[in-house]
Length: 122
Image 1 (tube, rainbow, N blue to C red):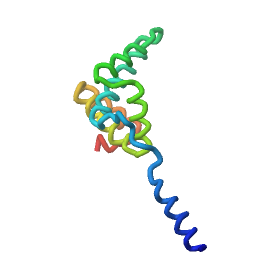
Image 2: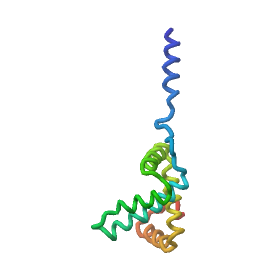
Image 3: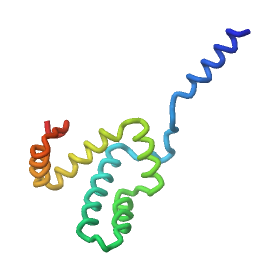
Image 4: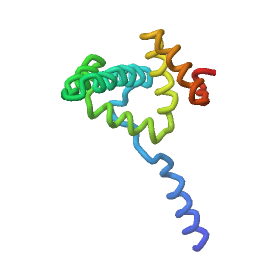
């Protein structure tokens, strides 16, 4: 009887392998990288226009990619927990550098000054 209970407890423990369920409207990793790249560009506008409300820019970015804010939030949480955000942010960085080739030179100079190297620059 004790062995049966032990086996039942083990089965119930290992049957719950995922911490989070896959969202119903999960955003593809490539689209997520594009959205994050555009959000980073929008984020830089906040530094230029500090007294302005930039929420409209965020809504525009999400709307231009046909992504609902709730879907973005749920997908973001899912990818963070599944440890896939590092790949997505690296793809977003590559997208940014393709959009602005001068940025690559700036990033390399900053990394040389700080002494850090990232996998992207190597």
